[in-house]
Image 1 (cartoon, one colour):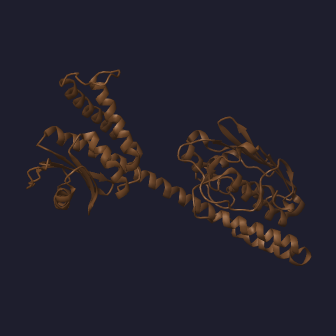
Image 2: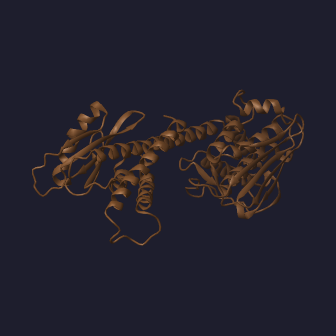
Length: 424
């Protein structure tokens, strides 16, 4: 089920949760106001707020999927939401969590009943047939938890007596839990997609660049051993960062370090033809951004500025503070591109080594993470060079860097920098 399909269902289930709270509020109102807490609002309003607040607390664990840890954290909230004597959550094979009394003698019987429910896929209300006279668990409602692959498990709510209201409420809460589980699957699918896109970017790191870098390093082994050593360290740091396995986000500082290493290797090959200016505001260096979203843009500038021309290539990389955002620009004086062709490239209609290295991939990832307003802004024309602007929110939920520092160089200067000098 897609996110667009889940949205209306989530609204319906939320409305049903409000209805559960309204019914509970009517019950509280019927008991009189003796002992009531002096707060604003009617008993119905307070019960409705309690219902929605409890649901909001149960949602985050469930977004991790139907795991033992998530079930354990959510079970207590769901039991409070339904007001039952006990509640348990299961997958198709075992009880994941139990909240309330009776686990010692009821839990072993749960999965046999769950197996029957899995066959029908429908909620069931049954007598527990408990032989202990002091046990309050006399009736149980088994409601299926569903996902894209069918029934994933069950929500089991225990009560002291048979209740049609409990059957309806448990069924609707199970539907709400199912929505959270499907959203968790969408989150995992999104993560897998981003990992696939990062792998695609890694695959686009040209083998020719690697071969040319090693050849350039080899050319300095006899004539300038110290520079050959420095370039070899730059190459090691660059490849280590590009192929690291942890985290889908990094910091601007780390991304710029990798870019400096890439430019040092490119400078060893092209010499004085490559001129680079860095203009970086220190306050934006800690900003988190998608991993490998800038290096392909710089590689694109080098390719179209040097490999496709015979003149001198000037590249300016700037990062400035813009309040709640960091604005990055990568500008070159290369051969540029036909704007119509560029639009086709970003739309995925043109592919190949000559179509702009990584541009569609980076544009899509930026839009996925931050929204369509944060796609690449590209100014270009045939023979007019290219300027790419990347705007990154400083703070966005779920976007944070993880992992150790990956290189030995520092990004701490603004102004001209010659790639032949190594990292700044």
